[in-house]
Image (cartoon, rainbow, N blue to C red):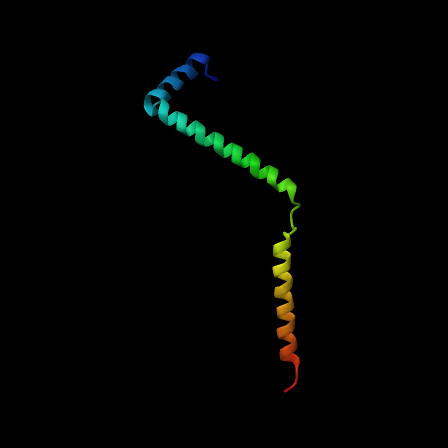
Length: 80
């Protein structure tokens, strides 16, 4: 009882290869490797730009939106 020996793991590996086949296992390994690589790359991209900061284009568009909002407020406040 308890842990599995090396022979147990080898038997499990042989059964898995027989059930799924080497081609499918190769594809699964490739997919997992690409996912890990993409995750690492995504984590590294976060270091380039601090969180909470917008790019230049986003700032400009947000500033114009704020200016437009303030202009519409001023138009509503004028007496008629």
